[in-house]
Length: 397
Image (cartoon, rainbow, N blue to C red; front, side):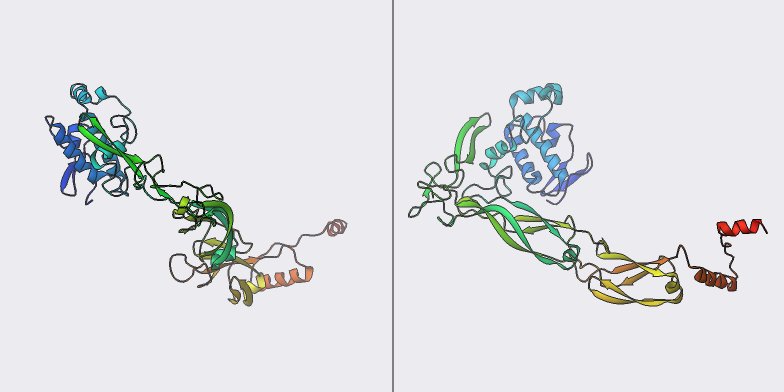
């Protein structure tokens, strides 16, 4: 599809045709005149349906909305009685609440494709996304939650996962048939998995197809089912898996393990397993994207004179050089000691914020030294508080 629906009245190229995005007139939506014959409307709708169908435009919600409007218009104008009512009274004459995907007119969008394409969407698979019948169905997808430590999320890990799932029956090797027997071709659908019906309508002969009720679309039946799995070809059991969690995952990440879900019945392909990740917190580090943040407390003397301190990172001990005159809140940045980038190379950084501790109380001798320092620097400080006994003695002098 080379274009999409634009603003009202704007013409946007779609394939070989040009479609005006209008919603007020059903004839204009189909691009036909009010004198158009049923055959002309049918051809116009078929052309538009191929261009606008959601299967052909999976990422374009405007095309899907336009497709619904076109389908609604055709469902009304293809019915002689509704067309006459529409021509006379407009849209109000054919009622409100129309839903081309399961309401009035044809009943559902599948009926439209039944008429035009024998039940199959022109874009692959059957109309409505049911998948092409025939053969064993795919197994169900499954979901589990994996809880990781902070370090496992940063560096990756091999994690054991336990789940209850459908596994291939070992007795019949997944066939569903008893030992010494095998599946037989379904006599109702002759192995196609579909049954077709022909019916007459106002537009002529319509051919519809659906899943065979005898074999449920598989094309085969089991005359003598396996006693272990009752003909399912699979049994429910607990399974232990070893899952490799890549470094850099975080809470909310989801790992998709293709083909590790439940197996399908009677040899059908397995579904997928989705592992939802939860990461535990850490007592010293916080994470923001690919970067780690921590805090280091240093004394007033260390901040003033400088010091070398050993700091334990997730990778081991690193020697931090605190320069003289360090101010509270200054941040040291250790490159490449953060989190491994999940979708790229390298790692983030470790940011260490320095917190200068100011003592709340000092022994008298240390306090005196601080006061002498303040006096030498010409800094005014608060006079020391006199004790209760000192105040009494001063009163009697």
